Length: 101
Image (cartoon, rainbow, N blue to C red; front, side, top):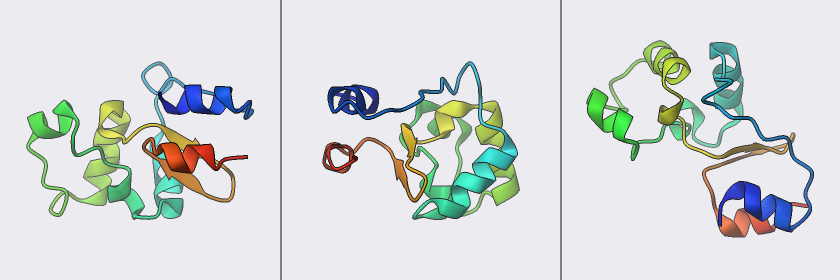
């Protein structure tokens, strides 16, 4: 099960966004990073093939460079990103999604 299916199953209203057809802007990524529990690096998908192919070191890459890369390559973003208004859920955690009302 994925995030969208979990929300639909619970009849939680949501508006999906295909990040490959409509990528996040740098400003949107910065705004999410401010609210993300682990900041900008919490949005980074270190398990993605693109992360590995780029040979990134999450501790050494600058925020500006990381944002620029995330804009160009949405696969570097940990998904799904669920904006609940008062908090963000980053990545699929079935327990967290089941608690969404």
